[in-house]
Image (cartoon, rainbow, N blue to C red; front, side, top):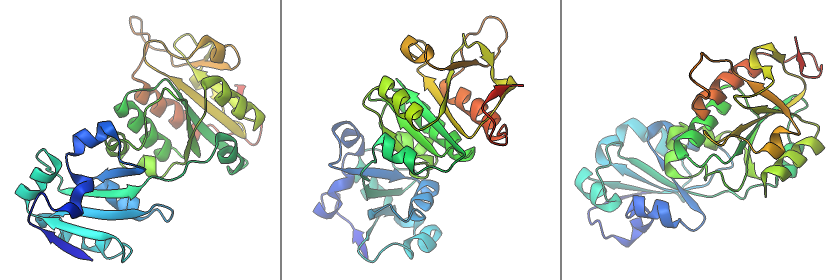
Length: 274
């Protein structure tokens, strides 16, 4: 059902008020979707509950096909550009927002148990930058990763900016949080995953690897990298670079590594140096 909003103080659009401030204080088990591409991705996810949509008047025609597929209980609010800007608190050039219910995350063990026999998992440890998290999820979706695990110090994938940077990848790739980096490694080991840790000091070059049945790629923050406790219990992998640089941006690194691993699956053989 559609509603025309002419008053920025209309209580029906409270969830969209002062978007940036709400980013910081939280949304009570909800999250915000922004932009046409991400809304289209969200609308295709059968397990995602979109509660309402706020559209600028000039975006209605382009999104009519999406709006028509939304559940009847999903309210569609329509506003002029000036009213929409006043609601969200800044110029809303994309003119497209939606609010969805935050899904209940599975435990790491439960998520890993649902994955196929040949699975690729990405683990994020200490990734506190929303652009990097969004970029990694975008790469994970593009190269067929089956799941992402995050430690407690990695930022929220359902933060508005992370979702936008991921181009909806956060809504496609299943994820779970581990209580700690060590427990993440424990869960992966218990589920039969070969753990690869990307590090500038890694002992094996990425280009020499082929992928076995179950592989987990762990990524750490730029600068500190992965903890020694993780490096010591995993195979350390490097991407050789020219002298003078010891690290790539972690999102870029994830794209290179996942592209290689996506095309490096063996026939059930253990991951090995060729």
